[in-house]
Image (tube, rainbow, N blue to C red; front, top):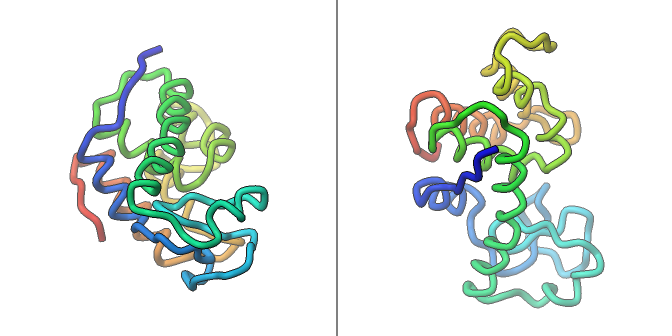
Length: 166
């Protein structure tokens, strides 16, 4: 099993996509929140659990957000390295980490797309890897334009080595 690292281009794009927010906000609405909610988020997409609320409720500095981002990202780099047996070019690894960071570790690890990356001939409910990838465009069962755009962005990184935010 190779231990890959996300590239500087991948890090920059992920930071740009996640967007730095120094005050807690609800990830479903994008609005700042003064009370803990299930979707309370801060920094570069850090989901605040209820036990952490007192730490983040008044906001954080950019330095703290960058440190939190590095802590949050590290397990996803390890997860993708451990989940993918096929050799990966750096752009493909970056795209997989960016996707996993967004959909979460269990969703990523159990996904058809991981099975298809490891074995393109495996049977899944999807016709191909692109369809399996782009199926991750829903939040609470509803198709979200932002997620559709994000999946296309990730797919462009994976399939074409194009790092462009939508």
